[in-house]
Image (cartoon, rainbow, N blue to C red):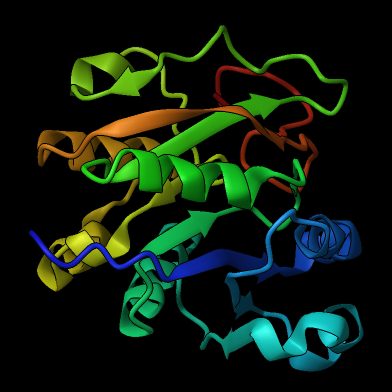
Length: 226
């Protein structure tokens, strides 16, 4: 599963109908990043170009848009995002959910961690609620064993970045086997089991939005919902 470690950087996200109400804010947090040496890869799930064209107009030259055909579930769309990033010869894929926001130094902080630790295959950052409180206790400086996330996962699809070009095509394709809604837990379990190591990026954060339109944002915490 080895590959080259060229640091071509893409920010990737899946844009879906429920997230369109937050899309302007989402894109604003990308436009205000402290570096601009990165591309933006957007997969449209049930959304058409007309619905986002005005919002992306100022950075359209950096955006690559894919209108996905019907039939993909949310887990499969995340795998497709990784496939499309690698197809475009990205070295690093920074991942963010379309209903979340990011500190303006997120891209710079993550890229710097990959540069500082060239043997690292994924980087993760703080995940905060919109009131600034942590969603979980202080995160560890490094993750190198599945035991680190066995009981509680803190590696999500909005606060992580992966060096996709060190993953084999067959490995990425095998991720389509995931049938669990908790794809992030599955993904990083697989990466850790395959020997990949993650590093924490300090002073970088993702603002996590909880609402009824996402899996975690259930209106009522019942046994059935859990």
